[in-house]
Image (cartoon, one colour):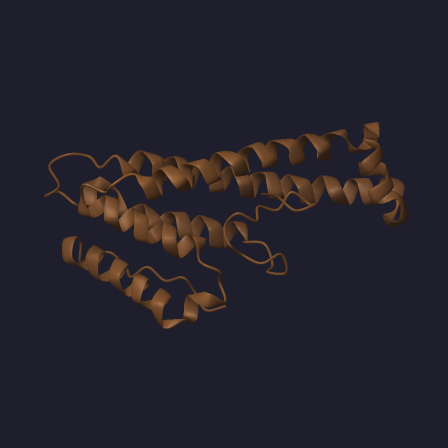
Length: 179
């Protein structure tokens, strides 16, 4: 689901949490990419969770691109109509707001798609260690950043790092960062 500014809220973060920076997002995707099947050579068959998880990762990058574009266009519209008339312009569907309304529509569609992917990943049994690791990585991504310091989430992160270390010890530990 998106808020009035097109920010993706389905990830479990409260609305007052600042948006994920592009650098942090790309670092997270890079860190998460260590879980590809190639690092788990003893897994004989690809896991059905992995394509879904990769599709979710692509969707998150798309959401960040939409969020950035929204911010840029929002600033342009604010300069054009002023802050006092911004909401009115958006609600009226004025031509000046068409690009923002288009992004809002695309963001809502993307959020629905990502929510569906999450449900499919939850329902799909993992068949490999890489699939289990992908589910753990997704759980960490969906966790509220404030709650990531809780012992249960630190346990999930530790399990993910241990699983990764067992099968590919040269990879760096996956961290979620403190809130």
